Length: 112
Length: 127
Image (cartoon, chains in turn green, cyan):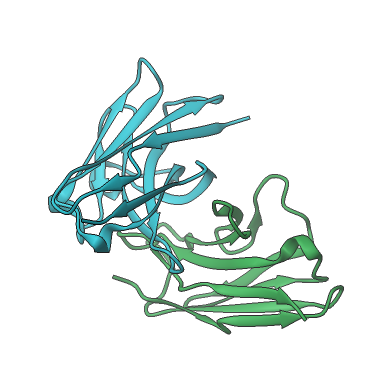
């Protein structure tokens, strides 16, 4: 299985400041069809996960544009341009280029 | 608006069978994979398996011998059974809608991201 490694595991951020989460895969996530199936999910406290980004950089419906995804190959980044109180939670990357789908261990974003 | 509502027994004894059902409201039932994903307390996410409207399934090899996922298209529902549970199966179990790759066939078809999720069901295994 592809191993997904996220850094940092915890990210204290000041409101209004940017935040960045890194996700690295143990193998390239470029699929033979040319797409890269890397997505990001947000899990607020006590809530189910919520899809933020799919295929590296595509924001899902209703996701604020302060969230952006980037990267290629084995290295990917989720950025929050200006953190708001509602962004507190745990963020997961997930790969689906190779079966079975696997998730990163999660990065906790909290307010300083 | 797509909504997933799930239910099932929350307390099991070791060796029993976990059984959960998820109902889908809004949107089409066909054209998607309907998935189960779990999260042990305080830990990360693990994909369990999925089924499409025609009954084609994909299972995580790590759980395949104990998992059965079924579908009832007349009710827009799908179900999870996990046999011979142990304390290690204690987790919040989520159902989710999976989007498949655009051009796939046979065994290469599976979810590439999950866009709608159920509220989760805590299943505790304890003697």
